[in-house]
Amino acid sequence: MLSQPHTVATSITQRVWGIAILLCMTAVSGLSQPAIQSLRDTTRSDNTARIGMDKIANTFLFRANADIAQRVFGGELTISQNYSGSTVRSLSAAFRDDQQFQLGYSIPVDSTFQILTQGLWLYSRDSRSLGLSSLERSNASAGLRYKYDNYIMLEAVAGAERATQSLVRDVGTLLSVNGRAQNIQLDNYDVSAQLRSEYISFTERTNSDIDAQLGLRREYDARNYLTVLATHRNLRRDFYSLSSLNAAPVTTLETRFERRTAIDAATQFGVLKNISADIQATFGFASVNRGYARPLEGLNNTSVQRDLSELSVNVQAKADYADATSYAQAGIASFYRDEENTALKKFDGIGDDLLDTVKLLERIRDNSTSRVRLFASGGTALSKRDSITVSASISILRYDTPSVLNNDDRDEQNILFHVVFFRQFSPYLRGVLSFQTQQTNIVFLKSQRSSLNNWNRVYRLAPSCDIDVGRFHAQPQCEVLAQYTVYDFEGMPSVPQSFSFRQIAIRDSLIIPLYHSASIETRFYLRYFERGELFWSSFSERPVSKNYEQFIRPLVWVDAGTDCRVAAGIRWYALSQQNIVTPNAVNTLLESIAPECSLEWTLERGTQLRVNGWYEFQYQNRIAFRRMPNISITLLRPL
Image (spheres, rainbow, N blue to C red):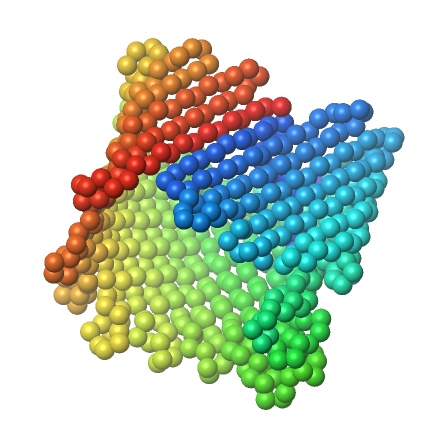
């Protein structure tokens, strides 16, 4: 941090030099993309277990999750458990399992070194695929971790891994190196770096990850800063691929090698007292190579290597204004992406004619995309009770394909406008009025698809309010929505018919106190929507269908003790669907009515048990046809 603020010219000069130095460092180190994420979800609090089951209609959902960190025998034990299962009750049982379990234990040797042991079990299986989509991975490893205060951490482990994919089981060696550096000062720059890598060698195949990033940040003062982040990722996967040869399945080894590099730079500088400018730029490079380890006679694709290369550039510049009662922002953003696909002859199992065909098919996928967007937003306090915010943007996208065989070339224009008005009527009542419109124009540049050229216009008006008086609380919301899709050449043969969709919906949630230990909690939802054939030139429509949807769920909650609440009530749902165009069409009315009860119980040490169940009586056109029990159980246990 500098002791005196720099002038704008001096700041910009120093930042240009800083970016140049970082680009040189990136070219030497070859770093790119965000680091491999930990299997643990860092947004969850430690030492909790979550177990539950939901049954809705014929679908059963099971879950069992836990995050634990405890001091054990002088070291730290960490456990991360995530399981989700689902099944649908039908004539044949079908079950899906997704399990991930990670165990780690570290014990300190001295103030800087720790001994690590860790294990992983990952399992995924769907019974409907006869085991072909099952995947299992388990490993165990041990190593050392070096940690210097809060600046540097480096760990290296080695072990063994067993993996099963496409019914083929492999056993191999595992090597992993991870590290990070942060809060490192280098010539007034705050330097950070992170590395995660993993290498697994099986008998016939190899899997590896290298994920690294290097970041620099310099703050000149509260309104002036420069940040640059370089990331790199190498991902290699050798996996078994099933092919059919003479009606017999054949397993072969396929390799996918992906490299991604990106450089992100951002700078902000103050121009005047209340005005600042911001510039962000991202440059990305990617390549993907796919091929087989050996050719198979009769399968031409196994003799070819397919390569993809991608370049992307994203630049945005904006200016911000802010004072005590208002803010405003305006800017421009530009994006460009180019994709090139090629095919190479890897083995002699394919003829020149077939190879030319494969190359042609790959070249058809080549494309380039460019987009320019102008945007602005702002808000101000109109009075002590009133305020308003406005946002708007317009963008033009161009999608080009060099191949004459690809007819996807198109231009897209998108316009978005949104305004929200706030009014504080009293300390107990607040109103909001929102209006939004979005208009998209798609134009295909080649005649083969020009019949799909269309305008899509959406208009949405949504008033709402928030009422909070003591224990009484309500949030009524209303929405009026209209959507029109108009084709440029409507009325001509082979052109889709323009159509409209219109909707009005009302929803609310009420909490009505009865006395100090009881209350009524009600949720309801009403919606009417219709679809129609649209004639834009005369702005008229012929309704095709109309639908009514209604839902209400009142529950009476009563305190059954200091830590327990119980509720009883009913839920009712109805959906009416009416076809207007087709003569003698069968209209349907689906109804469901269900008594419902709920329990919320806080046990010792903060453990929470939540049970909710309802028994549905389902009707179709007022004729009973099904009874369906539903239940949801959740247990949350702090450990």
